[in-house]
Length: 225
Image (cartoon, rainbow, N blue to C red; front, side, top):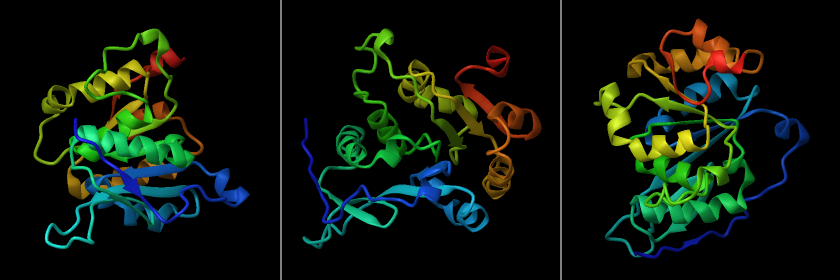
């Protein structure tokens, strides 16, 4: 098993103003999600606390330019390879030092991206290669809402087939998970619809109102009533 290490000169945990702490937090994970970050920041920056987590490859021809995991404006050097095992290990360490990553109210990402899968496993304290080794009785009940961005170039059946381990873990932890079933050009509009009423309206009510918001995992509206 390949080892990895991460280093940073910045303190990951910082004091936040009380008004910020009371806001619901939205975390964008990965390149696909980040491509829609500016739109949500522009329209909802004062309404929610908005964060971003991503991976950036270093220049292979420059010794001092290492791979990085980036949380907002904090760059964390990461010498591991871009694979599920190394990223999960590195992200476990980062999550331990940044509660916002573990306690976000909403996580948005493309489930086909390794960074999103690794973050999900790390956040739920799961080994991606031994997901069935722990008893379901010891699972952590997840209270975060996951919003899957429709993977580009994939059909819906492929999501369940190719992301089966991720979906199994989210189901194991009863993670409320919805798919944003929209074309790329319409994705900003559905995000606008979701977050315009998210503070005042449950995700189940939004599911009834918003075309393209599809329940995947977690208790259904009927079971919650």
